[in-house]
Image 1 (cartoon, rainbow, N blue to C red):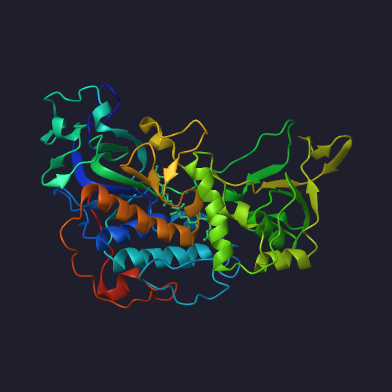
Image 2: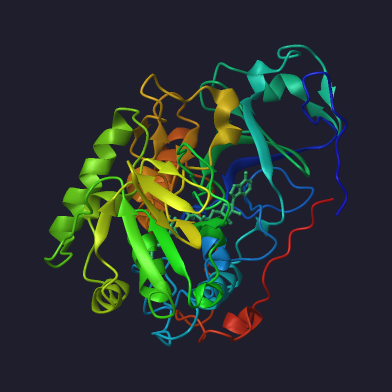
Length: 437
Ligand SMILES: Cc1cc2nc3c(=O)[nH]c(=O)nc-3n(C[C@H](O)[C@H](O)[C@H](O)COP(=O)(O)OP(=O)(O)OC[C@H]3O[C@@H](n4cnc5c(N)ncnc54)[C@H](O)[C@@H]3O)c2cc1C
């Protein structure tokens, strides 16, 4: 793929500017849900050479979002829960099938079924207001004949018969050139930002974050310390305890939720996370608020006696960890200590509030109505991502106005093929390939 674009003094690629109405960043559950709703509301899929419509830019080489990278040992029976994307059902999967195969196959089929314009691999490096460019307001032309004055206008109004949000257009700088857009839906998840807490000392043995965990086999006959109080720690404990010895430590006592996960309970949990995000506080995962439920992995870990939790150690030592004078030797440490939202590319927009997080009103960034975050905070679950995608698109229609009536939906079954079936077979359509010149 050719990389277009010269670089000007501000580091912005200005060679060829592709102009659309909406850019979605990320093609995981949240990005695909948003893309589906954009199509449904009449936004045209991006076509090379044509202005307008929407595009999905995804940093991965293949469909699947974070699911494509999860441990091969994570089976459909042991995922925390999975909700279908809108308007395309995943048939009851084999509980023993690896989630990293089933879900990416389903996403690939989904992209094909709904003819979603996903361009990959394209990594978004920075998003900024066109009006922040040094040459904003001048008569400079950008590359292939795009008038920079149009793209840097800050006063809202209309452009080509469409509304322009206050602040004007956004420039989305990627490793494959720059896109100009009226609105942005950020759906970049957390998988690419594993979080490793700092503890004093140095451990000479094997250490890995959950993101790099590939199953229990390498730990056979070893003593493994598992750090973390979430669902991923429970998964790791339930697997390694079948082949080795485990020690579990958590910073705070884990919260167990014995009751059923009713819709009312789910709503109460989401409301708690939502409130933090409204206030612009750093987000917490939904699971950290739901507590640990009676999952398959949880029951297995319990049966194996792996749920005797110890408090967090004080420091790392060469051969293990220590609580005061007490040292425990271990062969390996698995840090199941979570992830942080992948939002660094939004930094030029200055969205962070004094509280340290990005304040949202619904899925919209409170500080910039052009920007929406889905799969973030209260919507960082498969069901939450579905809802946030719809809400973000409704909001964008309110902001930009509704485009022309939706094209008729592609024909085809409303159920995805079983895992392993080629996605191209779904509904007789080929996955959309968008040429990035
Ligand atoms: C360990 C773990 C386990 C989980 N288990 C469950 C579960 O069982 N059930 C559940 O409902 N939820 C679970 N979740 C919550 C999870 O966040 C959601 O389920 C959901 O799948 C995430 O979807 P997403 O679209 O937000 O992100 P992702 O699936 O991570 O997709 C993000 C996409 O954005 C792309 N991207 C990232 N940065 C860029 C960039 N700069 N430029 C271009 N593309 C970019 C990535 O390549 C990726 O394709 C889990 C989360 C974690 C961390």
